[in-house]
Length: 292
Image (cartoon, rainbow, N blue to C red):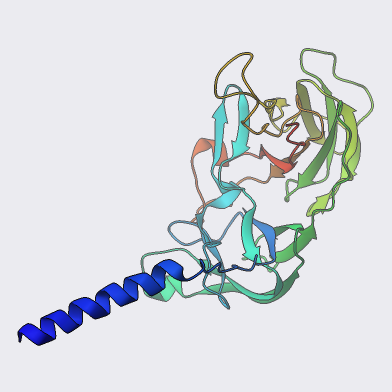
């Protein structure tokens, strides 16, 4: 027994010596090509108890966008309403298989597929996936948008509107606190359509949405996402180390107002007063340059 112990100790010493003389091993982890994907639930009449789930089902990854209710959970802060569940999430590039399910705790409902399809993602690009239209009327459709947005410049912002089914609309944009212009920024934007981007000077910008041809606004004029410039965690005068937030006050940003229809009465989509009329919610489309 004594000899075995001594031999084992010698082996340990020899192993340690060999380890100390061996060069460090560097393991290179390849960077996975990825794209950004966001999902918008604009279906006014169909949902599970908790909305819809958008999931890639070919690769296990953390991209799952689940429990997305109609309008993507709009929330208002400092006078600005934005859909809190509309974010780009990283997904592996390539041909991808995805499914959109009803979200529910009842298995027979949760396994119901509204869409089962594929899309091709290109490394470094962003994509918006919108499910919109009334399913009960056979109008539901899926639209995939590759978000190729030109840099508007360091003192400009890019603006757009998406009509998710509120009827044809005219939309005007103007500096917050200014006068509503006579001419529409975008005229006669049809259901399930996106306007082109226009550029505007940085600053607080307000959207006015009317039926096409004019009339009473669909809802109270809305102030767009404001954003915030790059800042310092050390406070004023410190080195910039916090990325800017996209918004109309930060040059290089792009912002969109999504105009949603009302919820279909007696459906499983939200039925509170806020959902019994058309409404809007903002999202950002392009981040400004870091600037540091």
